[in-house]
Image 1 (tube, rainbow, N blue to C red):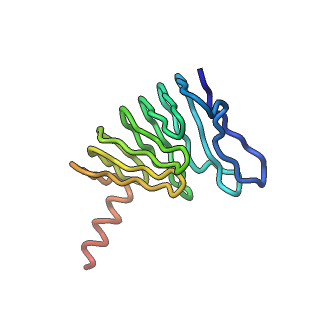
Image 2 (cartoon, one colour):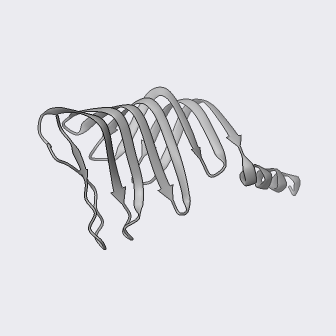
Length: 143
C-alpha cells in the first residue's frame, strides 16, 4: 500500500508529496490537498481508491473540492485519471459539480487543480440556484 501526504509549513507553499514515488501502489479511502501561499487550502481530492503508477493515478470515487476566493466548488465523478506532474485530471465518465449557486452535470471532463478550472466536454446541463440565479435573470432584463 502507498500513501499520499499533505505537507503544510506556514508561509511556505506546500504540495502533495508521494510517500512512495517509485513502482505501483494502491491507496484506499485517501485524501490529499494543496495549499495557497497564504496557507489556506487551494484544493482537496478524496477518493475511494487510487491506483498509482509513475506519474499517473487513477482515482475511483473522485470528490474534488476547489477553493476559489470565498467560494468552494465540488467535483464528483466515478473515475478520473490524474497526471501528478501537471496536477490535471481527465475522464470520459459522468461529472457532477456544484458551487457558487450553480449545479453542473455532464459527460467527460478536464480538471486543472492548480488553476482550479473544470471543463465539461459534453451533455452539459447547468442549473442556477439562489442569489446567482436572481442576479443572472436581473442582468438579462437590463440588456
